[in-house]
Each structure stands twice: as C-alpha cells, then as structure tokens.
Length: 390
Image 1 (cartoon, helix red, strand yellow):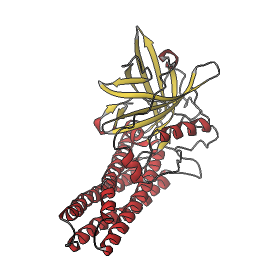
Image 2 (cartoon, rainbow, N blue to C red):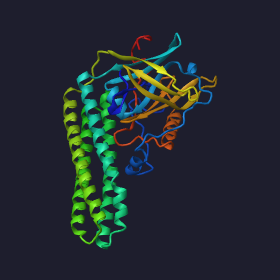
Image 3 (tube, helix red, strand yellow):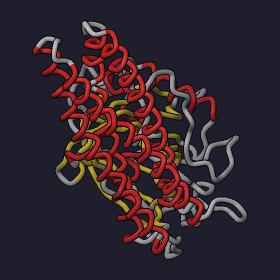
C-alpha cells in the first residue's frame, strides 16, 4: 500500500495497527477532548511543528523487524490505506541497506476504496477552507476593538465570535464523518450493531449539520460587507480590512460548500458499492529507509516509489529487556502531516496509546477536523492469513 503524505503525494512509511486491549473489537478511533478552539489550533499549526525525536541511545538495529499499526491519522490512512485492515510493516537490513515492506488485507472493493478516498479528500478540502476563515478572525477581532462606532464594534465582535463557534462545530462534524468513513474503509461492522447503512447515515447527518455551519460562515461574510458599507466614518484601512476579509471568507465558504456536496455524493456511492468483500487479497509496497543525520538517528527518511518523506520517531516504549515495544512516529511537510502508533504485538495497552497521543498534542500535533486518529483493525493479529503471507 502506497504511503504518501498529503497533496504533495509524498509516500510514507507505514506503521501497523492492532485492536487495542480493553476496547471492543469494533473500536476504530480514539476520542481526544479538545483543549482549545479549532481556530487556535489552526493558527498554531500553520507551520509544521518541530518536535524532538528520541535520538538519545536510539539504535536502528533494535527498530528492525515486524511492527503492527495501532492506528494513524485519518487524512493519511484513508488516502493511502483505504479498504485495508491488518496493516503491518517489516523493516530489515541487508548489505548495509535498510528496507521496508508494508502490507494489509483488502476488505472492500477497490471501487469502494476509491470512494473512501474521495470522501477523505473532500473532508480535507472543507477543513482547509475552514482554516482559511480562521486566519481572518484575529485581525477582525482586533478591528472590532478600534472602530469608533460602538454599535459596529459590537456587531463585528459578535459576528466573529459566532463564526468561531460555527467553525468549531463544523470541525467536529467533519471529524465524525471521517470516523464513519474509517469504519466503512475497514468494514468495521458487527451483528446487531454498526452497519454500512448506519455508517453512511452518520456521514449524511453530520454533513447536513456542517452545511448549517457553512451557512453561518456565508452569512458572516455578508455581515462583514454590511458593516463595511455602514462604516463610512471609519478609516480607509478599516474598510479595506473588512472588504478583504469578506471576499476571502466568502470564497472559503463556497469552497466548504463544494467539499460538503462531494461528501454527499461519496456517501451515496458507498451505500451502493461499499459492502465488504471476502477475497482476502493482500496489498503490499516496498521501500527503503535512510538516516540522513548521524546526530539525529531517530529522524529517518522513507522512500517509496521515488517519493521521500520524513519519518520521525518522537516517543518509544521499551520492554524489560530494553527492546522497543511501541513507537510514536510523526511526519510533516508542505501539504500535510501524519501521526502513527506502532506495536510489536497486535494489541497495545490503552494507557500507552493515550500517553502517546497526549505527548503528540503537547508538542503541538493536533488531530482534529479531517484528521482524527483512527485505529486499525487487526482481527487477532493474523487476520486469517498464513504466518508469512503478510
């Protein structure tokens, strides 16, 4: 399975997931309570975070071998691992060269997987446009404190606050869409529980709610124009700020609308062709690993099909014998970011996973809107496959 990062199509090293101990076998995502608004997180991550890696005493030789993917962020997983479960990776060394083999078991058709990817791309488009709205709010809030007309000050401040709340809710809606999309991607259903129909219903329900938030944002752009037309006694710069923001927010609102329409189309298609398949075909991809810096040995670089991507190990858990038992891996460059959790076993203690994700957030790596952390189904680790087939 090709591993790439975001719209720059950078293929990334895959790490493998497993069902978590202490969670039901149908659990596919981890809920992370937000500690800040969507716009604050958007502003904080306009540039890639630069977290420290576990360079002290890191030995690549100890990192080799089989890893199971505990989970990864949705924007990556649903773009480059759609329709796959039992994702795992094998890192090896021969003749002084490091290599990798990533593999997974297909559980939905390639046509359905393409629709999963299309929904993922649309989700990302809506969140990208929403962040563009966020970037306009600080200047508008500052302006609301300096307008000479008190009624205009109040209207502008109230409108900015309402837009921020709408963006928070839209981001939460898209997260729920992506979680349902992840369930469909992994055919994560159970008797008497989640079904393809119920998962599509979730996508439709929260897409509809997101459209309501988009309408609020569109009305915000219109209100900015209204305030501008009434701000005849304000400075030329104030009027320019209002006009420019109205244009940009209006364009972003339109972009969100296009993306949400694509979500509806994708959900309808998945309802027709998203049923699980039982052919048991294995998808795999080969690549190479490099250590570009001798002083930062945990900052690896992965190459798959010529495309290169950073692969930074930012946390490790060690077994009693000193071997590496779990890892937190991060990658970010122009166009997107990814976060992965790996385990040597097809299960991982929830306390370890929670600690890893908390570490990531403390380093400014947020998994919101289009990018919730999705658990990878391992189905007991073997997925019914012979030991050496994956």
